[in-house]
Image 1: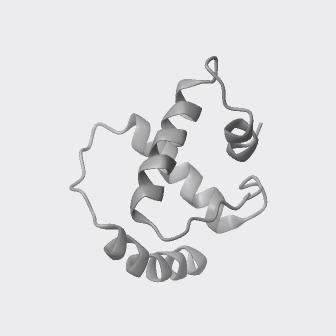
Image 2 (image 1 turned 90 degrees about the vertical axis):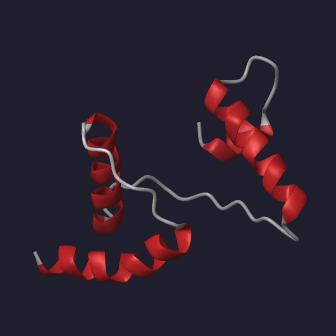
Amino acid sequence: MSNLMALKNLNFHSSRSSLFLSRVISEALRTCVSLELIYIPAHVGVPENEWADSVAKQALTSPQICDWISPDDAVSACPEIIRQKQDE
């Protein structure tokens, strides 16, 4: 079930991840003028998304601890990282 469907059907017995997501969205709505949730299909067949998914999975098992990076820095670094991966 997608996160959007899980949020639509949220109840007392929902998974912890759905309840967490609901709380984060509620907090965001307190400070945002608007918020749009968009369904994004699975990463299958989209090279950049598959790469991002594999990196995220590696991060879960990596003993290496990385410094925090701001969202703005992460967004500005993405085009260069994607170009590097496409050149490989």
